[in-house]
Length: 384
Image 1 (cartoon, helix red, strand yellow):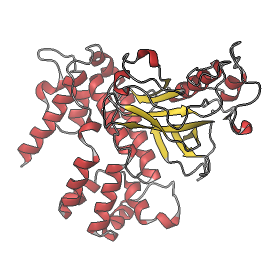
Image 2 (cartoon, rainbow, N blue to C red):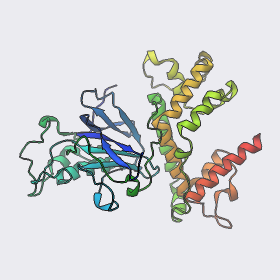
Image 3 (cartoon, rainbow, N blue to C red):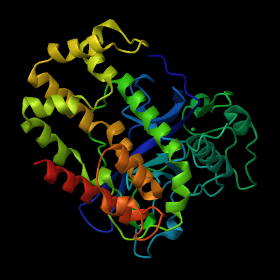
Image 4 (cartoon, helix red, strand yellow):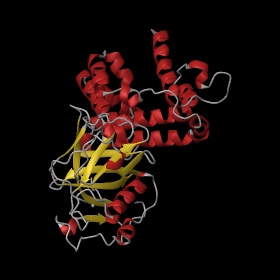
């Protein structure tokens, strides 16, 4: 698959050390790139080593519009006892999930003093461009980059200290980089920056490309259909604290279930997958097809798979970042007033139909998520 990035800039990936509090941010010394590209009206946020091809990223996240934010890590907002980063760190965070990804800029710092923590106007502009793209805004990246005018504190002098010709590249496509922390860059407790950081399925394999796009499109369309009810539920605030669906249905919970399931249970679960995933899993050597799979092709794909292959496919989906992002998006829809519609569509009985008692206002926040989970449990118990 050919990948045409809308913006590319130098950045290293960070790891969060959870072994002690405050949690530390440890920067990988590997030279890398952050880049975004568009596919089927959705952006992919990617990170790869510079020696790797653009179509083989180590991190590839399909972004639901308006869900993700790319913001500078502000040491001033951290507790006094927290160790501050010794580089320019950006955080990719989500409105619908507690998941966090951290990156540090790898080109030469631009401040006159050489302070590796100082964000220049150019650094901030790159982050702003990425954030706008994640919000679904039309951005002329090339023009935005050309407009950057660093302050008098800029000490760039045409040298980024690292592969100047490839420091940051942008596309003029309207649909639509970075500074240096050392390899040992560390930071304070990232949990204090917002919701707690969790891995949220980041260790998983990716589902088949065609199926992932189908799922992402379905989630986006479903969220759009709930806009009317969402405004009512959103006015309630977050309410009680309750885990996100993506935090409840992690691979350690879901994968053993799939491995131990009977053939009947496995076949039932396969019925919930986009048909293209089933067909592509059996036709990987025939290339991608844009044609909608026929009922005969879907049935043939199921019959061609052994029980082991079916379980392997389910495990791949359950571990995929797309699955966990879809769970996070579903959580956001439930929190924002969509519980009555979602419960009705899934034939799940929830308390008071998903509305506040004696009212036509839908539940929102953590109360809505809890009601959904309890409704699922009760529905399963009744069937048993």
